Length: 152
Image (tube, rainbow, N blue to C red):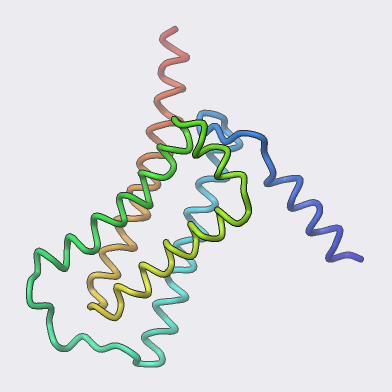
């Protein structure tokens, strides 16, 4: 009984008709999501490191390719998705779908795990750039709206 009430309360708390990162509540929820993603990245790193599935040897053949493999998807998933959700109605409606959220989270974390098998340094680049780009886009959207409101 308690778990169903908690689940219902969580659904009401996190359920919205439209995502608008210019609102304080959505900005804070987006920030909480970034923190939870950082925790997941840390847990996955710990699990992969503890099981010693991957090693640091051999070094990637191309450092530039390794960096690009970490940076490009991180920016697309970290900053691109919130931007599209904020600016495009189709992505905003899609974001309210539980299956779509599950797929996006799976792709984000799956990319992180997949990059571990290419090279662990690439996955760390991905995690750092993902989190930084997510924070920058959230602060940019929210802060930009606050500045615009003050100037108007």
